[in-house]
Image (cartoon, rainbow, N blue to C red; front, top):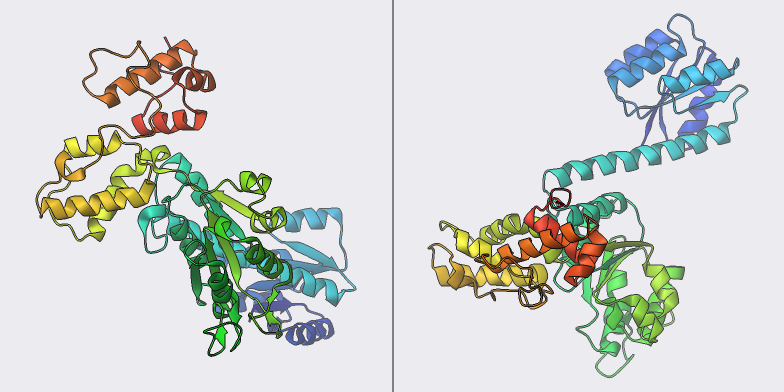
Amino acid sequence: MASVLVVDDEKKIALLLEEDLREAGFDVTVANDGDTAVRLLHAKRFDVVLTDLRLGGTDGLAVLRRAKEIDPSTVVLLMTAYATVQTAIAALKEGALDYFEKPLHFDKIRLVLARALETRRLAEENQRLRERVRAGDVGADTMVRGASAAMGRAMALVEKVAPTDATVLLTGESGTGKEVVARAIHEFSERRSHPLVAVNCAALAETLLESELFGHEKGAFTGAHERKAGWFEVAKGGTIFLDEVAETKPSTQAKLLRVLEDRRFHRLGGSEIIESQARVIAATNRNLHEEIRSGGFREDLFYRLNVFPIELPPLRERMGDLDALCEHFLARSQYRGPGLTAEARAALSGYDWPGNLRELRNVIERAVILAGGGSITREELHVPATGPSRAVTTDSHPGANPDATTLVEAEVRLIRDALEKAGGNKSKAARLLGITRRALYGRLERYGIDPERSQG
């Protein structure tokens, strides 16, 4: 219950405000002068201060200043029968959210209070999230951490959307950590005390998937010996994560669309309408625009899911995070050895990781077993000398440095040469190299290449 301090030397108005705000569900304390208000502010924390401007002794602006000094997050609203432009400007400069002219309109006051408190709640939630993200405390897994610009952009979006109820669509290649991000969004939402239900849409046959999502009544199909609640029902006020949502069939897509539009569904074989309170986070590694064009995915469902899209970068575009991710996976495997040799780290850096974080985790787990507590060398890693998706090779570019002793050195030389020929124009340099602009950015970040210094 939000607490409100009402300050007005007109006792009748103060009493009316107290009664009205109590009826609206607020915890109300009344002060009839500014000095009493200041004492109360020191004694108790208030979410909102609603004060008259003209008071005997300490005036409303002084109460405003004191409230903000004690707690800058306190919402302060002023009331006055002598409103002027100067009054409004002075109040807003001192930190007041708004002011009301007398005679008061209680409906407007309640509305402004409700909006102000919701704004404050979201601001506080965002601040807590930012602090936890900066501390690296994002869910139970550091797969979503990273200092790279690519992951930083994705996590900035996670910060913004987590405290809301918006539907989220996570896209990106397989193995980029979409489920981990979904869990982080749930954890930092107000739904965190309710269930998070993860459903792999690709792992179940269509009829079974519908039963799992929406439940079924006894006798709905062969083998349905009793009523069963579906995941939308189980999730209640929590979150349902639909992984690989592009794998669903048209009939399932139609039912998902109805849930997102009407927040209602019914169990298979049943007629009872069930309200859905669950937040939906969906994920796919497919290009849904192409799926829509080919008829494999409903366009109307796409727009319902794509309320807040977040694209997760592949590992090759966040290679600056590679060392931290390796250390994380080593810690998860309870490895206590001396760690990766320089040769092993170079081998990891020279690979493109088509399987992304999932592949890196598996490689590290295997290497830990093979190392048996000793140093992890190039031999224990079992990664190719070059990634299968590399577009840049020394054979295709005769300008490569013939003295380069490793593929990484040759690639760095090629990139620098291309940037020099392109006059620092990254789009042109990417075309010269035969790779995408995004891939070039990933390599610039990976190798710490400054395009400006690569000219001339």
